[in-house]
Image 1: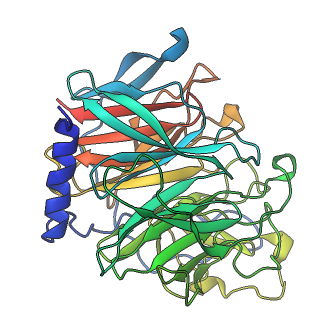
Image 2: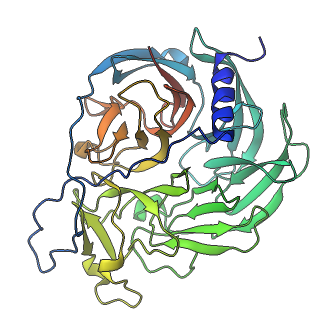
Image 3: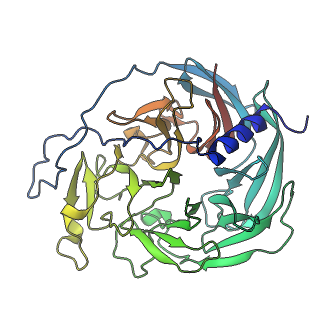
Length: 430
């Protein structure tokens, strides 16, 4: 009774990954098909060639009504061959998830949108596969400053660590199987700038994200201090690389306004990135990128729209402006202000044809509700436009929820966090 079928699937996935059979390297997704150049003095840089758009069978979504804590309900649209349940609710700004070495699920909760020290990391345990719900939600760490994301890593000596990305720092704790709280104080690995403009003025980005690469290095995303500006600190609007103990820190990629989602698939580091807010309702595109060592992705000097790179007129001729031809295009562009966050890859071991060889990306949603951009979990495949895999977070002009992260826990099973409803959903193929 200690472990359920959820933990069995996690064990199977761990075995697959250890044997090199866990995740196929995905074929490259593509940006939406390029439209005609936008009229104006600068028609933008275009790629030499892009994959042709191909079509797969359309996703048929069915509304499912779900019961939350406190008598609240939410109706979400999911593929007809998938079941959805509320795995946990009654939380607050629940964000990113990670599976521990002993196959438990840990999740962060930032409490609310303010800069605060009320954040919590929870353990989700005792999963009931029949009900599709966790039997216990236990605080593991409390009083944290905006804990957006966590990662586990076991070093060559066999020591396991929990890495916690906070607004002002990156810390790690020794981790032992079955822990209900850390057994030792945190180690401080890095500090980050922790100031910027408020949300009212375009927002400074207070979330940090950490992942561990297949080379054992840490990769940490640090967002910009503003909507559009030339930063004073190099580590802003960048992804950093460092050793597991924080040593040998360097900038891996720059020009990333707010890369909240990071995910290694094989040897490739994928990132979601949010474009600036001052260029209108339809541009720039938000992005799913493959990060290259040393690349500059353009912010604040230029941006992507419909498969082309354009100069931001506010920074035309500014010192440090990269050559537009060297700015990499996204693998996929999302509608402006969709706010992509967490992402997950489903390789060929997924039995559902609707899920196999796909990325799922949580689109948090535009603050301007009339745009109706985002508010879904989107499926991304090579050569196809992105499609909603889960919809309904915005219904009849009212925000029901905002997806934040996706975590695969079985061949066709995954969890989705919702930081507006304070809930976690469990989906699996039927």
